[in-house]
Amino acid sequence: MAFAGFQLPAPFSDDFAVLLGIKQSANPNYPVLDEIEKFTSMCEFIDRLNQESEEQQIIVLSRFAAFYLPATIDRALNPPPLVMAGASPDMIADCVLLNGYILMLSALQDIPYFTHYFRSSSPATAQGKRLPGLIAERLVTFSPRWNEGMHRERTRNDPDYKNELVTILQLLASLCTIYVRDDSIAIPSETKERLLPVLEAWKREYRNEDLGRFAQRLYAILTNPAFRPVVKMVRKGMKNWDMCGLPTCEVKENLKACSKLLTRR
Image (tube, rainbow, N blue to C red; front, side, top):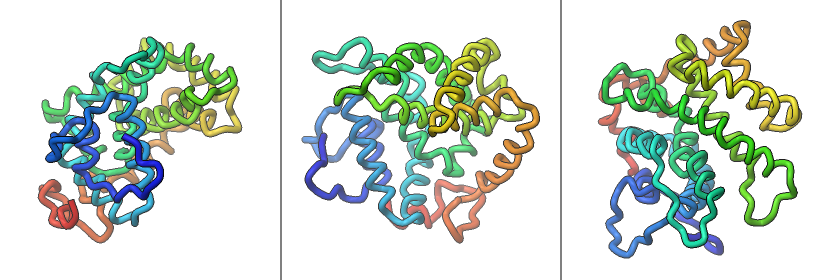
């Protein structure tokens, strides 16, 4: 599924859901995409959405979160395997660590629905609390090979390991901020002990790059008590998680039915 050569129409929330395979397309000829094609197309969809006004971006992402966030989290927890002719074991492993579902969650992390979901005590959201620990475990597992990738000359077919790690670290930092009052919920202590040396190496080696800065931020969230007031201030700034989040909209209840989120799909 490639869109090079022409202007991709502005995507709506259902377009993202169909692309990820969460919603069935009304088009019987819609192509069956493998996980790499989903990821690549998701990058293009997000880039195109970012060209829209801030208000339209919030409308699209908020509606997606209202209808499809749980299903996206389920896919991120248990991503479908990469089924592609000639796929190497490394390619299959890469699609577990970073895929279209993680990329979509990264795009949603500033949307109030996102934080509201992960803060919820509803049994329906219990599985979502496994996500930060699972992401951390995958980082620890795959970091040796990704380190090798960052230290060799990048070829045309190699992933952009540094930028992709930034996406993962930023999402993980957001999740850990949500659970700052009990970080054992976010990342189990055993996993955290194995993750910290990885973060320490990245923040030292890439200290003047985005990867180093995001590694430093996550490391501070997980280890530095003096950093907790900053995290709590950020968390306090997310107080609109119980509101619509659309500029000028002050709806606090029945968010899914907020009429301003339904003005454009």
